Length: 528
Image (cartoon, rainbow, N blue to C red; front, top):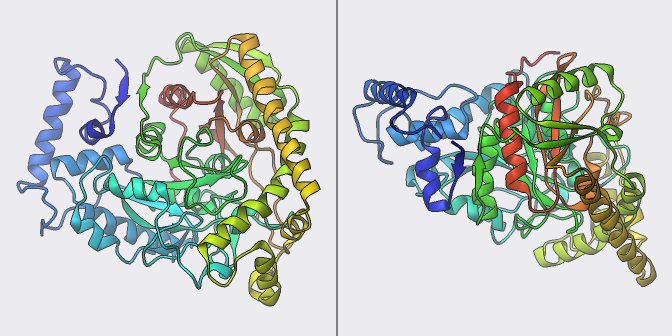
């Protein structure tokens, strides 16, 4: 039977079941045994109610407990929201602010503990979640996109997605570091660096990139600092750091999650999305973030599914390709029909046109955002001037060439050309690209390795720009899921599922079934 992520009113009860009970009928012997074991352990652990005002000290959950695990613990009284927050704070103190010093969390929410004691009911009741520092919160925390330019003026209201999280009972634990301005400032940037937050490290190899721009979100979840985080993507900024740090990242169809209150690059490609330990947890978050959204996570979802191998997105790394071939065999054994190869046409042209349009749209969208936010910096021109005035702090490693180029692209003629470029890019990537390929081969999804191993951090020269298969789905605005595939030289590699618009639930179901047969995620070792 499928695991059903149901309506918001049903989700709290659903997500509190132990993961290995979901989908089994109550009469099933395994269900009965696991339920009895759970109740016995719960009774042994606590003989007191799980009320919000509970004064007892509960044992902390194991590191890397999932949202679903924690919801089950809360349901039976094995822990409390306050104990979860304290556990995450301790992990952050041990691993982020000392020890390996991952530098993934840019700011903690000073109200997190008091929020935990208020116990807002909802689908994510009591669950701690980190959010990227380009997503607005109207609280004591800043929202800066990693820039010093926005520190002096805080937003006046929560982003829509933050409102949804709060209403569902989630506790906003803090903000994560990112590539400053979501990596749209300079071609010579280093992913995971911001003037406000410093440099985020990859928890698997501290000498290597965490990728970006949602670097802190990915590193924090991978290191078990929090069970989940929210990232944002314009082109690769969720799937690239998620794959590089060995976790699940989901970029949904653009528009499925509201972009209100997110510092923009371009509304044509920008979207928030969940970054989690499992696809199951990503589906739980999508339920809340997207509203009327349901998923059936059927472990047999791969049976009969037609999956097209996009060889022109797979790269040439022999070790990555070997991992991928092993995964393809597991997919075949699970009943999937592998169509190999299929080709995505027009991708080079679509990517170039999208980039041309993006630099023009950056000025328009960012100006509109900064103007309504008010404060001292109210336009891209103001931002460029601020960075020049604070060059030592803001630009010690790289400049702002993309900002300067975008500022020059503000004439009516250029804006019109950008609009035409955007329309053509979306058509080439979507209807004439992904859609045409899916239809030609009657496919459920396109697949490929998400990434090649990330390079060593080099602040003097910037990113080494290894292959990431993000552009087709990003330009089209279509869903893209990355799930852990394996490791090359100790560095994580992801496996991508891409589909057409609004097939998000189906993509998640395929990814969940893949995750169940591969179980490739590993605990990081913080190697140097």
